[in-house]
Image (cartoon, rainbow, N blue to C red; front, side, top):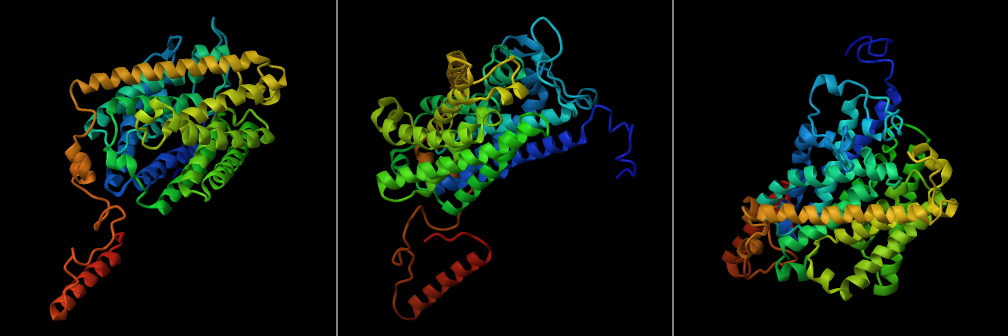
Length: 489
């Protein structure tokens, strides 16, 4: 390390660089990255049926890796570069030294007609912003994958991820964050309620429709193969959300502090609300339900995390734990469309419904003081603070654009891929799962919830032969346990 790394006027420490902001932004990016890797990789690999553990985890892993290359080649500047269209930026690479070491710019956030950017430009290099925004792009695709787990052809998924990132995600990101028409109109999306969660929920639901359902046996019984790991993955997701919402102001400032506190309050409130509803209606608390409640609380607060008071975060958490619960547990069973579309992890309810709910509540509850720190529109505020119904109307209109774009573009991408690659694995491979898709399995022994049958495994015969067989089986089990292989009986 250079001895003068902290000296003044060094090439690596230009006058415009705020070391604290840069350090926090890199930390926040790492937190968001941990949500995906290993957070959602672990969550997906454990929340599904045993025979789909490897495939589900790999879909998340592949989406993360492929997104990064697409992002630095064309995606970042399509989402945060110079304006090409009211909803899209000009494509370009983010790979050269000259571009990445300069101060980060959000040129399209300048008011139409010229002038300085409406948002304060970050006081760190472009490379930091590229990394931070990549983590958001990647997690959006991984969340989308939750809708098609357990049957999508992995080769079709490999083709889908770069196309969707370029043609769908970048449009939402530019329109709401990068300086597009929704940004300048004043639609509020503090940290991705629309760009990430509404998009992934609608696109995932659309993809589930076109890919087709799982096998009937899988739809009827799809128990998690490891609930403890599922909780661990969910915990990484919750803790990582500090970077998700805390990094949105692009600085280590007051808004970041408010956002992180509100995020945790909403998540806790939503989890408790969802759990209480499970106890009231079903007689016992569901651990899977608690994780879903945690998720909806995190999603719902995201559009307004740094813009609402903490008592409002409690209200948003209560709404997040009840409205998506109702849509999933009650409305879903009454809707022919929702019952027909096989959304594996209910991403539509946990992300689309919760994201839209959070956007509308933000239009009601955003305070003028906190909005003044973030909004490009002077005097913007929620309806409960004198903003009128107009802000709620803008929130609904912005959501309608995101929904329509994702529905149409996701459909076109999948129909195009389907001309060359089957979107769904054939039934004979679906019966097998991971071994058919990858030639690998997550666990060494027997199937999902299968009881150990002594007669099937030749260990019930009497006499010396039976004792030898039993001894061999016990030795085999002991050896597997010693090597750290999970044993399911």
